[in-house]
Image (cartoon, rainbow, N blue to C red; front, side, top):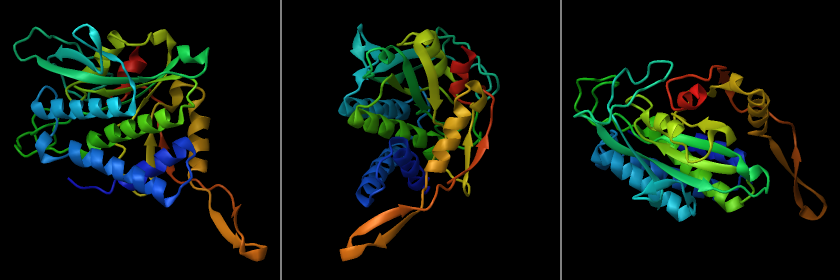
Length: 301
């Protein structure tokens, strides 16, 4: 599956960090995002069904990226620090029913073995670094179809470029930029969840086995299906779950594109003049904290 996902990714990431929108910055970021999505949505990974070899390869890929970025391992491996948070589950329900409250039965004969990938970037403020913000996305998809698929009887690979190689790629690059800038006051926990398509099992396991105290976790930002842009419409859910979200979202949207007019001064010097902020997206806002993705597990807690 091929989609022109890079423009939206680059735009959101550039805005997140106030980066100068130079050609090189955009080109490097686009190349990274495209590399991630093209691998995660490749035939080799066969649709990344949780518990199957393709999903395991996807998880290993995210693990390698977190390690290269220099994030602190947030999982556990044989009693030692690692990036993987392993768990077992048995799909028991419609994966996208609401509200999300999956139950796990790891002892069942058809239990799946899979893992979340967790990397931690410590905060720089001596007080606020005790608080954490989670930025997450699920890396699994539907494999060759079956339950939860719109083509349940198909045996073709469901590549999942948008759902959710796109969100996974965005998490990786957000982690890279935050680690490069080193300006985060609070600790940031980056999580790539597994088992989302079968019933939000990875995020449910995390909130029951958090690597950071939940009472010190002040927000969870979920990136799911951020690769497809229909016109200029951008969906943002959970606006009603905190008083700050509405204003933050509106301000960020207004700052996305500020038209710049280049002028020639005396002696040929070039300078820029701002002509006013213009909203980049038509925001589709939803106040509900529940929805068919991993943020529901956190909101439920």
